[in-house]
Image 1 (cartoon, rainbow, N blue to C red):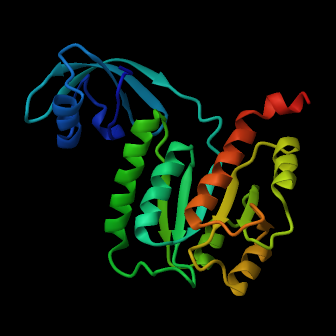
Image 2 (cartoon, rainbow, N blue to C red):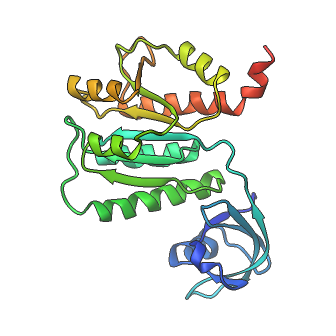
Length: 252
């Protein structure tokens, strides 16, 4: 069995003995059925991984003893996903799958055609963070993506003002193709990448115009109209593949 990974808050890393939370305790005791002395990895979501071993199997909280710390270089995490909020059950899946694929941040907002998030966004942010944590542990990644919720598209653009980056907005009538994107990312500098994916109803003309004015290039993903989920996984996977294999492609 592969060594399991567990998330810990950075502030918890003060002692050599860490008490894991109830969910992690249940997973270790009931699901994985680990024994004393078995190895695990603790990750703080900010680039530090800890080699550890199970020190106790108490019902009140499994304890892990830290052996060694490893700093992980954040060299590939450049993909940031801007989303007009889709149906929340779909958004849960998108956050999980795209965290596994290495997305660095999710910038969410109520688009004109979104099913609006009206109440208590802080509760939903907590839920989305927990989904991202589970996905990070599953995929053995060392960085937890940042998830922010904005009132509208204008607030997101204020956040990105003057940032030097690649910016794309997925749209079925986009002038750029995936081949154009491949060429641009392959030949260009290593910069952050921002991708805009619309809700189920797509972007309005107003939103598309605002995005273009902010430097977002409309890009078509296929000859067909893709769902919000499929478009997210498809585009993130392609970009991730390009940036991770840039050196190989440069030789052709």
